[in-house]
Image (cartoon, rainbow, N blue to C red; front, top):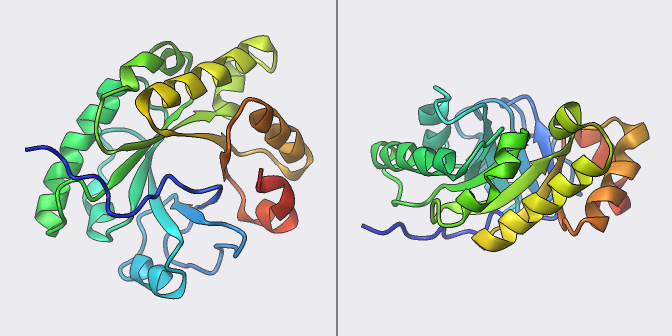
Length: 219
């Protein structure tokens, strides 16, 4: 059985923020058009957000393919999940299989939950071609700049890695996004760098930074 594409288009964001607390929606700034919860959203939170902001895309972050929180996350019916540190298309395919089971248990349509894959390790960069065709759920491929900078430094290798991730997204027909967890002092530099590399969408680690710099974050 082929997967139906998500009914919403959760990867079509420009400015997303990460909210560590899954209990409250009060930290989602109006300037954001998507939110990524770092914890399992409390019961009813996703529905509350959609009632108040129908155009807001809602995701939850996973620390890996085998993250035990996935069942609880899918029960809250987010638009998608953000897979941190995706190392290859095999990770995306494996997560798609788990999502199919979770959706069946939750009574959701097959393929209702999209996947955003963030690449934060050189292995994921080198495996970029494997993401193409990995899963119909794959809506976005992103570069985790801070994580890659820790492995590659801030020089030309990092710029090349960003370019390869963007190429992987294009080959997969997915949105290219950049994950920025910088502080306010370095946020402008990070935004300028990812814009120069052709990333039109960003995920910012601190909602307060978007409140202070909405124009910069708009791309």
